[in-house]
Length: 291
Length: 234
Image 1 (cartoon, one colour):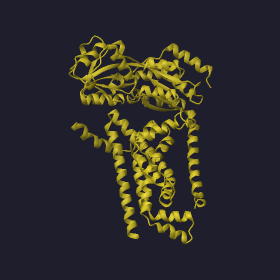
Image 2: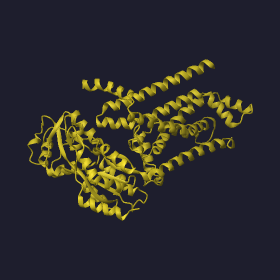
Image 3: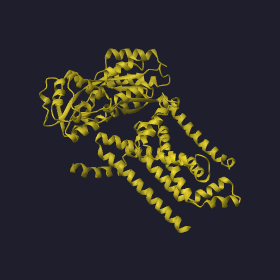
Image 4: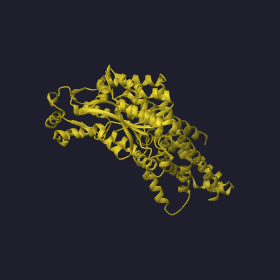
């Protein structure tokens, strides 16, 4: 019996070989593929679908976008599962570079965080003189607060702002969604709760929500986005060249103009913020070659 | 709320039948990935089911219990396990398969396998053991006799295949984790539904849900049709 199943086993192993070879062929195409881990805010707001087709058309690269929270994106970069990351958590990004996981960090754009909540503003945060006061007013009120709770850039920011305000909301009024910004906004809308959101996602969702911006404008709510290529010294076979090409394009005049032109319902979502000096340094870097 | 629910279904149907290329691309990816997974999983799992049903060996009962237990493993656990294996930090990191359709296929094979084994095993158990013995005494080779037994229980096996296909084409956890929901590459029906729902784009989500429903219905209709014919001819 054992001898007779041999042909079957042969057939099966042939099948798995074919399977493997197709997998390897896929690896062969990797040079033309750039993998970018980014935050849900850049993907869900539609910005990347506005930008990337132009880059792909000009360079022949294909950009695979994996949209997760900033925490997970940083982790993917650290593990070498992606070629570059586009995220918004400045201190964490600087640590990422300092630890040698990534090359230099480049400014790409910024927007700001806003505190949104019920239209009646039951906690009265509109009257606050700064973000810390707005947060402590929410903590003292009887309103719900929805937290991202997913280690994303927005969540990191929210934690810093709570710490700064010195207040903590009681557990029963503080709900961690553990999901993307859009989902957290939907939950806040359904539960008539406050939440912290980046302005880009807010503008993309505002027409579907029964909420409004209750507090904005504190410099502490500044939300810069940075782009970092995963260090080729740690992982030789990431597509570093492709990653640098994408960084170069997105910080170039053309990329920056396209970011500035992206509007939803007549409102600009992101302000271009690439540093011209950095862009020059970047060009020198790519001339020096990194093959 | 009324306005939302009343406008979504027409919008969904419109998307579906207007031939929206993005929607149909997502559907095609779903079918390619799940179809490949089933085709690869079928032979090995049938052989396993056959061995479990026809061979006595130590640990056989334990193995059956294990396969039945695996039926209950959440897709995200399968996804996470494979993620750790395929990640660059993992043992197979060199292959660079994470966030590819191949990774999704691997995850779906892992999900389909226990269903195929478990349901295939019970189908084989319901067959008359003498089929195998008769075929052998009549001089058929082992593979030929194996084929005869499989033919005997083909409807049970077909049901197993449809059940497994139904699970993998509808599961979101493993596909999201292993594929990464990359547009044009690894975005399939379930991950797209999850994403569209979180974006508040309910119409596209419902349209994709309708595709899955239509698919489930057609598969069931097909199964009924085939089974009905089988009963008439035997």
